[in-house]
Length: 70
Image 1 (cartoon, helix red, strand yellow):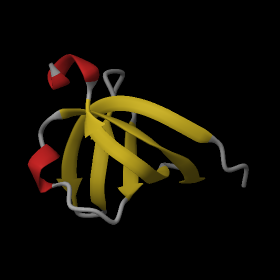
Image 2 (cartoon, one colour; image 1 turned 180 degrees about the vertical axis):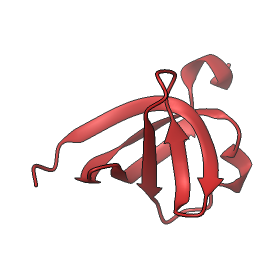
Image 3 (tube, one colour; image 1 turned 90 degrees about the vertical axis):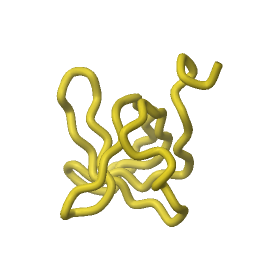
Image 4 (cartoon, helix red, strand yellow; image 1 turned 135 degrees about the vertical axis):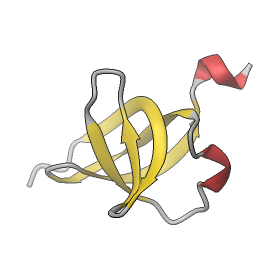
């Protein structure tokens, strides 16, 4: 599989499959991420990482979206 890099924004939530991000257009990505995300749940975030499956993203970084960081 081509491991392309992505940066996406959306709402971070927890699901039965693990943490997910849902973008404004309704696209859902399941995230592989090692660090704690609890403080960010329910927030609008930006995620950077590598596509590692059909709907799976190995996240290198998750942080508040720019409009919330002010």
